[in-house]
Length: 149
Image (tube, rainbow, N blue to C red):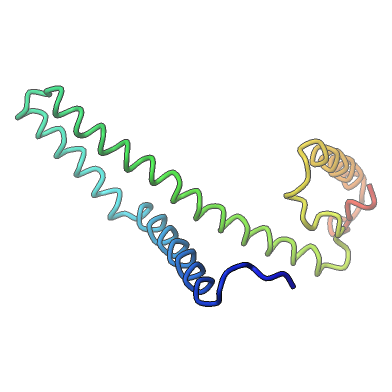
């Protein structure tokens, strides 16, 4: 086992910071998709328009709002992507477990998300062949694997 180069206390602090950010990004991502967030965003836009009426839609008024929305959008893209990456990885792991656990399924599909696009297209062609052969089956209950194609 290689030493990480960090002292135990430093490693715990680093883990705590990473864990905090993961929880933070997950909570922000969930909150930003809530009904309350949508209503709040709609209210802010209405308030912004009302303020614009009083300011005669001045350049300063537009500038302040544009800077604020740009900063929020920029941060939200990365926060939501972090949360989405974690969710995607969890789904892939669950699917890998299902494929690996099923006795008829091809274990070639475990870790398929790390294949190149060309490799995925080859597998897609095999599934097309499998679909064509399944159309000729008399029983709709017949199970097939990619290994048969």
